[in-house]
Length: 462
Image 1 (cartoon, rainbow, N blue to C red):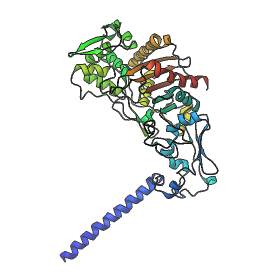
Image 2: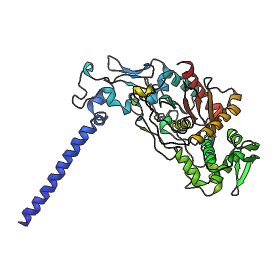
Image 3: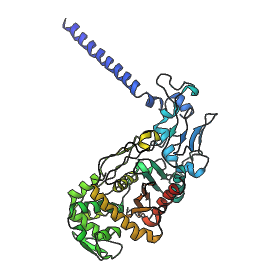
Image 4: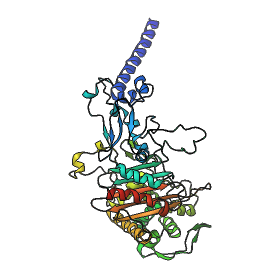
């Protein structure tokens, strides 16, 4: 009897496990069928490069960026530069760019149906095209301005959330993809990565925007302070160095003229705890998502800091600081928007008609700054543009703007990463932007012209 009971118990356990497995399979079949059909091991998908039945991809002006012709060949935009500029966003036939539309939304593009699979005639399928928020001409302008440099350029509307420019280099022509071999792989190093969303760089002086916000909120008399810069300043027995001997500076001048000595002193006085608190409020160490794409994190961490000297370097965007371009644009959008960041999106379907008409508010993320602090940081970034950039002929499509450049030291014998971040102030063109150029050198000479080209295209070719 005991043996029968024991066997019955084993059979019961096995039966329950089988039922549980069948239930799990059914659940996954219902909820994940689109991902299953898009896998490369699906014979139908693999034999047609996965895009034989894919719909069109268009930009905000209904310009076709990719379509499938009558021979089931995937055709990309007729202009070479436009194809290269949008390769990371649109994708190619290889699906090596995991964050591209053709990789992430393959099932939507092919019109896959759980009931009919991929076999439903095209005439009977629902609309399987995807409209993007980007402007193809502005993306091309940014790409051509980047030239042969590696980097990223992003511009988005900080009132609606629409991403208008998303360009990453290095890139290649998706219509005629190169064969990457041992002989040329260095030329295409990082080519499958969209640097706008998937990379983080040492920020350098653009981080001084965060340090300024921390000083405003934690040093009560900051606007009455002055700082003396003789090009170096000893903290904890080691120097904080500055490229120039600025002399006597008030708070606004110190940030506008990007004085390392002054900003390092501010960071030390604010302290590690409050610096971290402000950085995290402004989006560092947090995870953001843009149209289903998880952004690479911006990082501010003092866990490995050995004292005030490294705290000081962190306040000027060095030490272990990292910044993601899309997040930097979001941060600047929040500064221009009274402290509230509007969530960026790349797919037109991510927003409703009422949202676009301004009837309902755009989707926002957690408040980054108080309205008062945001207004003061705006003033500093405007002063930076007036003092430093306008005098050098930098314009943003003729719009009023605030900005901050950065020249981030990365070591290892490499040239600095060049940055510019900022916002425009115009009711019809409320743009936040970020540009990072690897081994670019100075932000004003390497990064600023790229932002200028993109925004000028948006303003002058509406």
